[in-house]
Image (cartoon, rainbow over the protein chains, first blue to last red):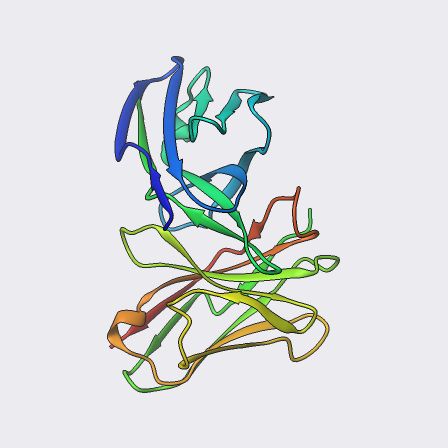
Amino acid sequence: GQNIDQPTEMTATEGAIVQINCTYQTSGFNGLFWYQQHAGEAPTFLSYNVLDGLEEKGRFSSFLSRSKGYSYLLLKELQMKDSASYLCAVRIAGAGSYQLTFGKGTKLSVIP
Amino acid sequence: EPEVTQTPSHQVTQMGQEVILRCVPISNHLYFYWYRQILGQKVEFLVSFYNNEISEKSEIFDDQFSVERPDGSNFTLKIRSTKLEDSAMYFCASSEFEEGNEQFFGPGTRLTVL
């Protein structure tokens, strides 16, 4: 089966750095995505890793270790608008399909 | 910037009624997906669609569900006889290629079954 774990909630201070961890146990791994979801809205793409290492994209970075089944999302220079849920999703290579399997999400609260 | 659109934004229906949720994927995308998110829970995969046929479906996607691409732009999800537990946010997503490419999500349709 597929199992994706991430912390339920985190709190961080405006201007600080926060790291959100994700561990996964899946078969047919074909990449790991991070999405941001504000309450009542659709998930929006943040980053994608398919090879080990760090991907940097502005204030956001994502790291992947396939051997450890581990990823993290790093958010720098936190802003109040970064308060949202952050979803770790693993792409599974199925039979002619590449669906995403999501974790439950980490609700990040940024405080002044 | 191109985006996935969905209608309606909110649908209220009585248990046992049929509903059709509509999506317009990004125009040059070839792969289409439906996901759902029950309030307070994780996003769950329902079905993927490519080349006018279902490529994969989850256990949730039982005989009450069907998908269709009736024309060159729309992609629909039909629930034949809604149940209370079908109440959720339904997201349509599309991607340009099978892999190496993100899935773009629509704004969702909130389905409430009474």
